[in-house]
Structures are given as C-alpha cells and as structure tokens.
Amino acid sequence: MLMRTDPFRELDRLTQQFFGTHGTTARPAVMPMDAYRLGNDYVVQFDLPGVAPDSIDLDVERNVLTVKAERTPSYDEGAEVQVAERPRGVFSRQLFLGDTLDPDNIKADYDAGVLTLRVPIAEQAKPRKIAISGGGQAKQINA
Image 1 (tube, one colour):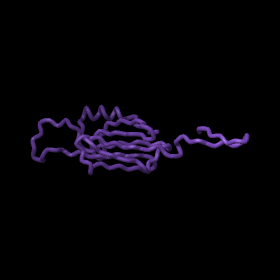
Image 2 (cartoon, helix red, strand yellow):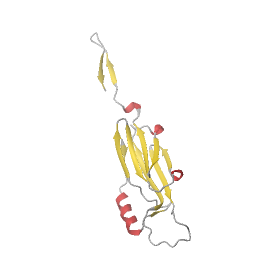
Image 3 (cartoon, one colour):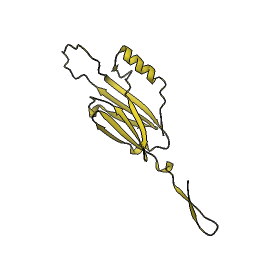
Image 4 (cartoon, helix red, strand yellow):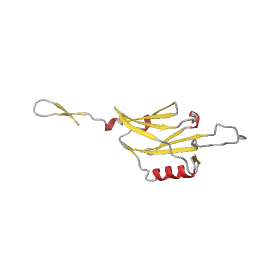
C-alpha cells in the first residue's frame, strides 16, 4: 500500500500559483501524480512535461521513494521573455512505501512527459495457500 503524508501540498500549490511556478532546490515545486493498483503492482504516474530524461532522479531509502526532476527554460539567455507561465525549475515528490511493497524491484518508464513507476507487491504480502493436516487427509485453505 502506498501512503501519502503531505498535509501542506495544497497550501504549497496555492502559494506557487500566487507567487509563481518556479521550483528551486530549497523549495522544489510539486508534480501532479496518479496512483492505482493493477494486479500485483502499484502504478504511480507523474506529469513531467518537457523534462529531459537524464534530469530525473529516483531514490529509495528506508521505504521512502523520492522523485526529483528539473526543467530548464527552453529559450536563450538573451531572450526578452513576454510571458513565462510554464512551470520550470526543480520538482520533487516523496512517497512512503508500505511494508507490503517491494522497493528493490521498482520499474520506471518515461514516455511523452509521463514518468510511470511500477512498484510490485512483496511476495510475503501476497495471498497463499496453507496446508492443514489431520483427520486423515490434508486440506488446502487460503490465507
């Protein structure tokens, strides 16, 4: 199970809309996310349009998954910018992975501006059959 504990996310989003959409290393911008279970995996998708794949950094430490990315301006340094509404700068998001997930086998794919992570459910957390002996015959039950 994925656990999300970020009580200030909406406050940060409102602040970014009011003061601008540029994330810094000290105050990275958040990235939109979807998460759902599909079979024996949790699928997490992050919107990162215009981000170069080599600027994306994924780390897992003590069941905390950290996603960081950076989007740099696409215009030249001497350009006279008239409007700059597209988010740029540093983006970051942390997810707390429950004990029932397998952080050692996370798979990542980046396509069309969407980073997709597949986090498998750990083998010990999957349902299994347990044999019952006695009464002359062994029976199987679901655990």
